[in-house]
Image (cartoon, rainbow, N blue to C red; front, side, top):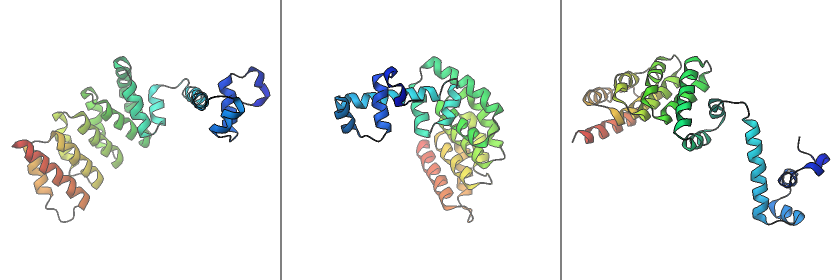
Length: 215
């Protein structure tokens, strides 16, 4: 644990962070330590990075992605090289098949969409039949991001799902990969007087985009 008791053995950046932890601001630390403000900031960032490394020690990349927020997950995925991405795809394929926690499963399906690899489609398609509406919603969202016409029949089922948010997400994904059959189905569904307004807007947006694609 970081404390003043072992100050003689502490590295300089840890001493800076101790002052910061005590509530001293950057200007105060700069004066106390006779350091430039930029150097104080660098010391604090360095220690925070060390904390982050320790937090993630002995965890797989999938565990780390599940713990982070959406923006952090995106940043991590975008920072990976080709070999690292391939490793993530293998790990996530295995993890999705055994994941029991609904919230984690939704995140895993979101990651599948961000990876945009059609080799993940068979597990993404599988979870479009999940009993939890949120899981189905993320499954349909991932299909749109992957963008394969192999998903069209699944998405056609999505636009008649029992949950309105699921129908909305399926329609959004069909904006990217829908066909003539999609247009017919959406035009029939748009006349349903009981449909939610936000779902109708998603249907209309998909119709508009698909009709423009036909021209």
